[in-house]
Length: 286
Image (tube, rainbow, N blue to C red):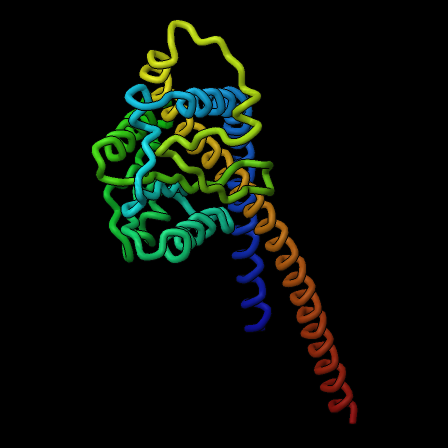
């Protein structure tokens, strides 16, 4: 009977876990729908604005060139690693940690690499081995363009004052609920449009290129960072929904297996009791 009690306890425990994971899946699905609509709506605008201003910045020369386009010898790199404040999202956070490790071990090996972390999970790991100059994990408590713009301004200031020669962003790009792509984008300096793509961009600028650079490039950079964080936010809920869906399926399968074991053990126990009763009756008759 002790074995039956253990199986009943395990069945109850697994059933409770299944209810929790199922509830988390539904919550993430609801949040994913809103986050997906937000990133899908802004991505075309952000991408086109970035493309336009890359071309515009590249066309300016000499004193008219933007300070955000200045190409310098890369000795100091600032990596903005975007993850999440919570776990239970499969490989969502660990993929960003791996992507960050790839940058400082291979891409920028031998250079000074510091971090700005957005997300407690990536901050907890990266801060143990590298310098984290700022942790902006609180941004997820109120994810608005204005709050992200403040972070972008700090990054722009660190680049223009010479503290860092390059700023890159590492985040999970949202593709669908089951797929998130680890993406590394150069934030600063602005990467110019190259080759035929640059030649095909033909715009009439009003009032002038210089004024547009001065006013719109900062806005474009803020939009670019906001898009990256929004992408990561949608990816987080997609990854968590998928992880909780798999966890619920696994818990269901384990519960059914335990129930089968319980029924078999109970049947064997009843059979043994019947045999003992029959054996005892036969012994009395003899």
